[in-house]
Image 1 (cartoon, rainbow, N blue to C red):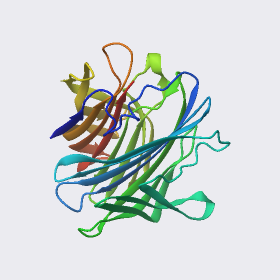
Image 2: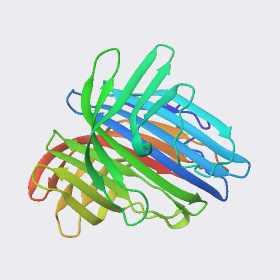
Image 3: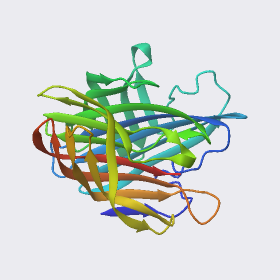
Image 4: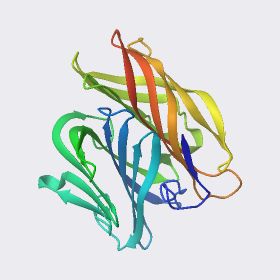
Length: 297
């Protein structure tokens, strides 16, 4: 099932689909709670963005939930604050709050917005995946708390930064196969004008041993129109590595899409896809489910 918002609306990720102004430093911190203990998958993305620009720092906070096979936008907050020497540090908002522990580590995220109450806790550290440039990606055992009860799962903590209008962050994919495998794939950064969205790197944590891949190919095998942005978006992804350690495909089972603001008829796109698929990884066939974060600027 697909949910969409009209161009320029702020309910999904209007802020996150916004084309950054020239000479901005952009700092993203994206958390994803996901559990496949229930059917269908429960996923809760918590996204923070800070744009360091002339006159201050524009801070944006957004949260969604995927449950019952559909996506729901929970909150979006945005405010312009004073210039900061540490714009990358995430700050709480009116409805989206944080618990910060030692060394500025995030321990929990809270949403209190009227009747909506939601909490994601980062319970136990599991893995840290180092990039060549930038902060590491970290994986935690996690727990989501709501009036309907607790759900056990995993939390991905993904920091990214880039300078507009130059190099920009791209898509990422996080997949689970029960408790046996957690797999994270990230598009290799490239200049916006020469983006090659097929180039990825990846890391895995599994009972058979951890893996790391510096070169992966992710192809958009099937496309469909997203009329509000006047673009085509992927609905099926093919994944492969040069040595054949990973191969398989993912299919979109639901999505949440937003058309951002921009000049001309073609608009930026921000999307979240729930996906399922089958992969051959390190000689084993596994069924996977997860989330694809998709952007077109």
